Length: 320
Ligand code: ATP
Image 1: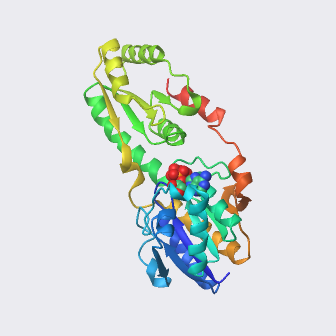
Image 2: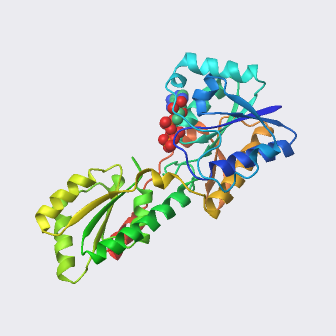
Image 3: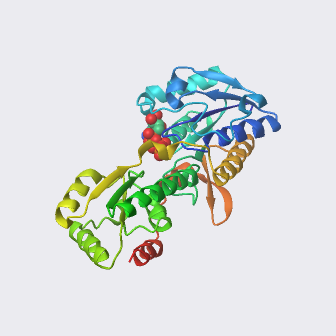
């Protein structure tokens, strides 16, 4: 490998910059050049490619978002788009590529690997929903941002004796909701994976808690279930207790990454640069059972993971 390209793809996540920095510096240490591809696969097709030196990644480890930008690119899902992408890589001398993103982005990486460009994926998503790894870059920052915001809503909710429905990110995955539900001591947690939505049970729960003297009632709802505003209206009508929905939204994606995100990003980025330099391709970096490892992309995409039953059971037991 002579030149490694790097791109960020899909939704941005805090810690992506720390991963970019690690890939650049470890590659340079290995004697390899690095090029940054802006705006994901879209930027590749538009040939938005820049040289990255040691100093290009100075002063970014503490910054949220991604200095390369990110995008979703429909054209790259086509054979023609992938062929064009591989040709552009070759034209710029890029013979290895690191892709930081989620499952969708790995599919693109796999297609490029089939076309002769060595590719390695790094798990970057706030949702924690990549099956081959116990950790994804961005989760820790996002979950701490959400937790702090929920604490604030709880203060005002208690003062006004309200019920609050707080919607956190996670379209298909309830990890942010589960962790905040436990960490914020929520009374109810609604997860897409454990979908047993029963509004009457929630209403009874609110009424019983109020009788027992609780002044607030916090419901953490995952984005994948959604409809928080209409849920609030129905709950208020049924209980007579003022009920408000707060949708935390994009604030959960931003901000300076936590130490944990910077650390994992630095190790995973370095690991990706090292295995690319060793000649590996079509692999994803993961963290499993206390170790950094790499997996075949196809095998990684076929793995299954879900909300652990015991953790869910605990979240219910402690919310009484
Ligand atoms: P997030 O978890 O944040 O949604 P993601 O990587 O899963 O991240 P996607 O939107 O699914 O996000 O994928 C990002 C980009 O990867 C797409 O816009 C597209 O360019 C490329 N991609 C996705 N699926 C494929 C595929 N099957 N083949 C080729 N490229 C793909």
